[in-house]
Length: 375
Ligand SMILES: NC(=O)c1ccc[n+]([C@@H]2O[C@H](COP(=O)([O-])OP(=O)(O)OC[C@H]3O[C@@H](n4cnc5c(N)ncnc54)[C@H](OP(=O)(O)O)[C@@H]3O)[C@@H](O)[C@H]2O)c1
Image (cartoon, rainbow, N blue to C red):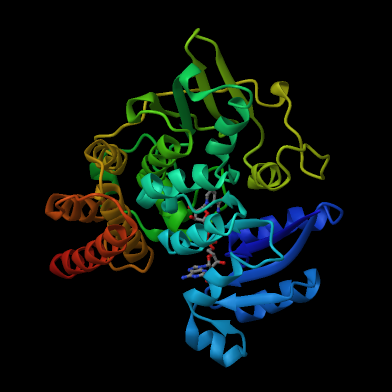
């Protein structure tokens, strides 16, 4: 029996995580739940699963609901004695401190919040190795890579090939993206996800974040991570080995399979998910990404190449810009402009925790001021 804490339990990944816990009551026991401010849902979840500990990071919502409040209360859940595995599925780099708290306390981590490794992979992964905990990925692409890598060492790998659907605007050119709406960006062709990641999928920033996440999670060089567009979202990623052999992992676009694998690893248990068969999708296609239209993928790669605190600044700028687009405060193409504007102004330093926190704050302020100028 694994005793789990789910941080971000009210979101898209959180709700699907609890669906998997519901299917495996003999393996998974939910003991702690955290969210931002959705008191009603977190209470209902705690009641259903008998979770003893809940927290909301929004202090006012927490006070009104009589629940422990603040990011410190959320972080404390990650280090509880009675927790074995922490599922980090909050919306962005806000998951960093809870992840570090979990690793420091010797808990295994199932990571959905890719922004944590994008901003701080160089700090988090050495700690993971030092503490000897297991970090399993929830992102479907990284789950595919993790599964294909079982039994192999990173020095046997030639390339990690991350697949992406291309999002709702695949095939469009810059002129056609000038006036696209939030609703159009949220209309993802194959996945149903939270708002911010769906916008990232439309800009292709999501692939850029995944390249950086893979670089740190699997300890490979940046030039060993490639991206290929695969509109059907059936092949979830590939590993090419030094002998030329390529392994891939296939399945329907349903996050629950990756979530189950991350939580029950290394076990494989039957479930009620629809399983895939090759004859059901006889046509699978692959193409190069268009990085001149979708500049965010290019910018993320540049941030990784520059290194230091640059990916952290890039990520913070993107969080601000993507959320601004979601709230109607900027246009679609301005997301990349704001990310680039922040990167140009950033003088990268050495990535230790203190520097990263300061860089994240600075990049948010700078992105906000660029947003004001553009209005
Ligand atoms: N959805 C997917 O299919 C998918 C796939 C791969 C990776 N991911 C990654 O998983 C993470 C979550 O994505 P999502 O789609 O599940 O997002 P989401 O639906 O927007 O849910 C976000 C969750 O985080 C909570 N949250 C937000 N800010 C918080 C804060 N400051 N402190 C504590 N909790 C906070 C929210 O609580 P409230 O409900 O109270 O606001 C909610 O529970 C992201 O990093 C994303 O990139 C998602």
